[in-house]
Image (cartoon, rainbow, N blue to C red; front, top):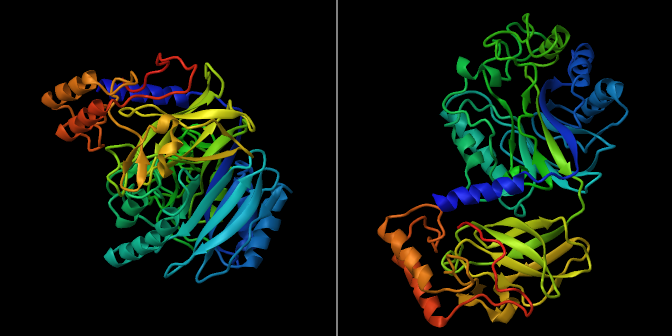
Length: 503
């Protein structure tokens, strides 16, 4: 428990760091069979409700054609602001996705199609102009209606999406948004989206359990805005949570692109219109004019959230690889987080910056440093809750804001060749539990005591990541103690541990 509490406190310290930022609003909206015979009637309503938000990125579903994209851009967004532009539209089976963005803030890179049995899922890739950060936005409109057959079709569509997101680089910034047509937390498609077995999962900030079509979740519902038909679409009033923005874990890590806590809005839903029209007076969230606009524009409510883009200059370990003895079984590694420091190449090797890097099952991760610069050599140091502190063999230099470092390719990648070969990978020695730089009797005693006490969970005496302190952990320390394993550092570095982690 003590270790877990200190880990959480360390995380909170990192999260509280403040960086110069630009903030942008991303909205998703099912615009109901656009264009149609009612487009000219609905366009002023779209103008009214979008003017109040002015999203920096607008992703829409149920777009029928390039002509529709042009009409929405010119007759809706263009009336609001000349800044808006449209991304590449790809006309596929059934209805499609489209994206609009403020060209002063974003540059469009690509629209990559993910085919499914019914409708394409679009991968929209954009770059934020002031930072150069890339964000991927997956827009989808899953199979509608209840029943196991339709649930299976939604699952198949999500599996096609996960095949793509699971292959993304580690710590990618992406969101999945649109009209999910999912009725509750137990649906297989929803569970697949959140499944953390592979890296391409997303998080739902609301964590609503059970079936969502009930009054206790009234404030989260997005469909339908009407109890009577207007220009097509569903009726029956607000009772389904179909429209969502789900986010990759990277959007909750400090630096880069981050979700702004508390900024998610189900636009116009005040929680008081369950099974009723959104514009039935009064609406405590928006004006009557906007409530009417939401009612007449579409049978869905748009949802949006704010995201910050870190404008502080940084350099990045764009690919960092390390395996931890015990956590690595010769094939895969139990994912865990390490602290990576950047230190001056010259004695006394002053700490320049540090960051926490989650390593995946292949030992890979990425990390940013805001106090390091290009062209200056630094030692790269890995620290882990139960392993020996390990330094890069030589100082490393960031070039074009990027550095790649892999400890696993040879013993010479660590200072003093301080690595152990497991299978074909060179790994960080395990067993320095008290972080004093040596694998010794005190570390053995800590494991022995925790084993006798039945300690379990995320603790430093668990040396193989199975969440238990047991004989296998003791063996790692015993062997490394006999071998005299210890931290090896370049001359001029104080033997005093400056910072202790997870004690």
